[in-house]
Amino acid sequence: MCFLELLNEKIIVFDGATGTNLQNYGLTLDDFGGKDFEGCNEYLCISKPEVVKKLHYSFLEAGADVIETNSFGSSFISLAEYNIPELDYELSYLAAKLAKECANEYSNKVKPRFVAGSVGPTSKLPSLGHISFDNMQLAFYRQINGLIDGGVDIICIETCQDVLQIKSALSAIQKIFREKKIKLPVIVSVTIEPTGAMLLGTDISAVYTSIEPYDIIDIFGLNCATGPEEMEESLRYICDTSERYVFCMPNAGIPENINGKMYYKLTEDELSSWMSYFISELGVNIIGGCCGTKPSHIRLLSQVAENLSPKTRETKYTPSVSSLFTVVPLKIDIPPILVGERCNANGSKQFRELLLKDDYDSIIDLAKRQMNEGAHILDLSVIYTGRDEVKDMYEIVRRFNRYVGAPLMIDSTNPLAIETALKNYGGRAIINSVNFEDGIEKAEKILSLAKQFGAAVIVLPIDQEGQAYTVEKKISIAKQIRDFAVNIIKLRDEDLIYDMLTFPLGTGAEELRKSALNTLEAIRGIKKILPNAKTILGISNCSYGLNENARIVLNSVFMHYAVEAGLDIAIVNAGKILPIYKIDDKLKNICRELIFDLRRFSEEKI
Ligand code: THG
Picture 1 (cartoon, rainbow, N blue to C red):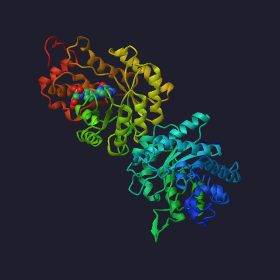
Picture 2: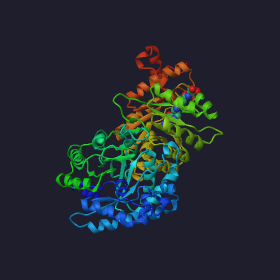
Picture 3: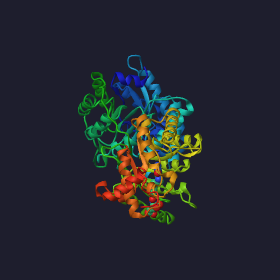
Picture 4: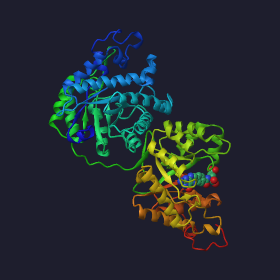
């Protein structure tokens, strides 16, 4: 039976700590292969393979269904600390081989044993600029290739500290699965500090939102940093939210530092009773132990697992976007969700001037000001004649990632600029946008980036003939892009947001008189054929050419009617939208006549 099938039948037990148990073996400098490698547990696969095997046997003997390879730090990033980065593939391969040999000796039909390839976070945080996404992806690519070639059954991305680190590992795995034409079970396990958040402040809902779209993840959970008690609330969130199997490997309590030595005090009984509670009340599927847990802990956990069976959970997840710090659902009870439009080089003089001065600090201030004015999400468009869009995207998105709470909307049609943004953003972003203007090939590039990074995408009804103006055309092109995205690229319907296009209403142009009506009708239409479709509009486009006061009123009234037609998300200048009851009836009526083309304006202008 394969591992994932077994998870439907029984509670699975992983092993206990690698590091803290190896420390208790009293290893000498010679065992580590000399002074240069002291503390490099991974090198023991070469210098003392029998010690590594002894550790594996101790857990198999205790009843573990799965043992983890001794490869937590066998990426070139971690091995560089011992000046042996080039041994990454070999050490990963050896770690897998050793573990697999041990597991095979214990494995039988009644109790099959498996090997999970351990992939640790390294000591570098890409969100803090310690390392680039590409370099980190390469490190994981080599490490995981070694683990798979050495025979692991499962890949375990564990002790995750930074969402960008998780994403780089997932990109590496996607690449390997594609190249090798295989699919192994994938675990993502994050580390929530005693503060209740990951190292950079990302809480469980934000990290889950960011990685939820990745369909290669089978198992999600928590390990390290704390004992089970401190994990309860985050674990409850996972069990209530995620349909995936749930993984839980706590430390034997929060370590206490006594005279410079770490002590983990949680007893076998304490750990076991927490874990039985997690299994029977919350629905956890996989248990085991992290730092400080000994074979004696695992022995008792195996007994717990024997006596319990997997619980069926009812879960509910609302499609959302996120930053490293905040989650914004794509549907709220009282729409619309507001997207701040002002970080746009062509749409804001202030932003443009800051960009031209490379004044990134003030750009972050402008982003924060928009949040204070009510924006939930922030649009970012840096394309400007004479500037390097990719570089500007890089500089600003890195800062948005660390300093801005609102999720990002990447306003670009340049695949390289979009990719750069996604590689530097830990949250779940929205790509703004994809269309069929340049044919299918460019759309495929952009949609594939959304798939690779788990982003949402805005669909614009534009094809080689241009922007769709009639209701039928808008819906038909939107549907074509949707079918391509879902059937060929394998995005999900909930990843797509439809923009039925906003044209200027106040220009007097005869051919645009029906444009707002068509836009509103198309919003209703797309929701009829795709009932869960979410819609968005760039509201301010409707008032181009009018004076500032007229713009505020027309934008506000247009947004009101768009929401009435079913609009979910509005790109606006959040500080300049008036609630409809604050608008004078006479003005409101003039706007209404413009929007619905009631034809009193053939000669006059507002
Ligand atoms: N749909 C989608 N994305 C979009 C749009 C859309 N992105 C860009 C745009 N349209 C939405 N953003 C803006 C931003 C600014 C303005 C209008 C739309 C704007 N700015 C003032 C102007 O140009 O007159 C300048 C204000 C200033 O300088 O401060 O009107 O439709 N998916």
